Image 1 (cartoon, rainbow, N blue to C red):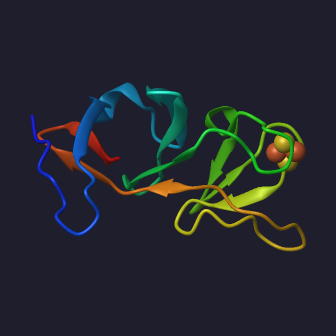
Image 2 (cartoon, rainbow, N blue to C red):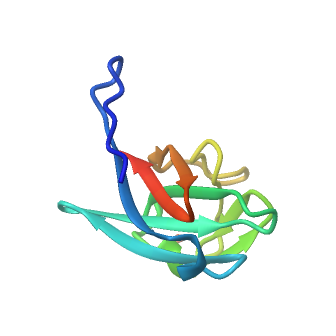
Length: 111
Ligand code: FES
């Protein structure tokens, strides 16, 4: 397990789950303290992680639909970039994103 500290940000990599626990185009939720984080496996295999609360009305983003690099909120269908965390026009807002990487089949988030 890796938890090497980033000296610039003071953050660490934390193992959260195995890649195969998330279906392609799917998401799941993990907890980090009081924070719920939605992790997604995109169609091309990339892993992306954002806060699991839509900035509109707190919709659970892990239950949304992955479409390319975006997640579509399950509540009112706002589209949110999984790269920047920004809600796409014509709507606005943003969610926090978390750096993610895979090592030995395990997903690690920088928290
Ligand atoms: S709660 Fe996500 S679009 Fe309304």
